[in-house]
Image: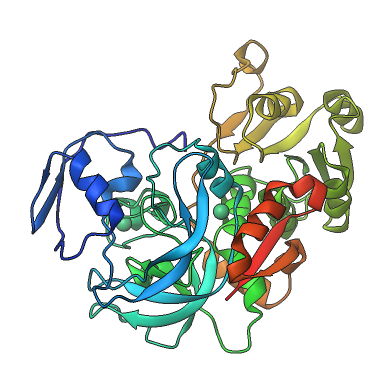
Length: 408
Ligand code: ZN
Ligand code: ZN
């Protein structure tokens, strides 16, 4: 989350702390001042944590099962408090289908130390609205909804610009700074702007792909990469998000789509999704091959969908004059910017955290079967097989896994 550098801020938020869950106690100990009615943060934190991280239990003894993170390397499927409404703008949603994301694996590895012990993971899914706060007007109990991975108030300066990812009260918080969707129930703040209605009769499994991977591949890769008809594009990384970029790039009919990965199974799948050329960068020299394919000119757009230095530098090596390098990958380490070769090449480099502003448009393309993201689903589990599903997803190459679906 390179673009979300920490900022100093003070936020006063009215939080009535009636019954603190475990998170709340940690929280209270860590930050300066906490009272029964006000929670004051004046500490440098990532912008995403501006929302209260205090999760209350219902106080009625209602419980549910959820995947709970317990510090680096530790997770469990356990009984925990069922979420309740905390703000008039909240909804509580009963999960019908959810999935596991590469980001969840990063959290479990301990790559995101800001995630606290006790956090329920997951930021993707579809469900049924169970309860709504008094200020929610777009949804009611019983509505089927897509849960967006990005929470947005719809009212702040960033939301008004369509940059929901940097919403002053939301952004990516679900399964990160607040409890997420790998559970029987989830609380969704700003439900009116953070949920999307599902019409009756829809294929809800396919719609899980709209929570995160489709808008991420499309907005960060295809839109920022300015893919145009006749272009030659390269997609580095054939995981679910790279595949989402592959599917959605074809809205713009690029002439050639070169997909690069080190997993032959994923490359084979990429071919069935519309890749015109596939390159296994572990077996052949990707730069030489791409330069050969493009008559030495390089590609018009290079989409980086891995998040390591080697794959970003590959993009720098294959980008043609006037081209666009569109980064999607979550980078944990610095990358060398080769200005010694790129300074005169008229290129642009973009970064983006998905805003999910294209979700309504993508929804129509899925409903009309212009794209079929359901093909990305390789494994299906019941919700209480969560640990087994994680095992499969953690060994994606061996298991030939792309997206796993968990059904409640
Ligand atoms: Zn995700
Ligand atoms: Zn906002």
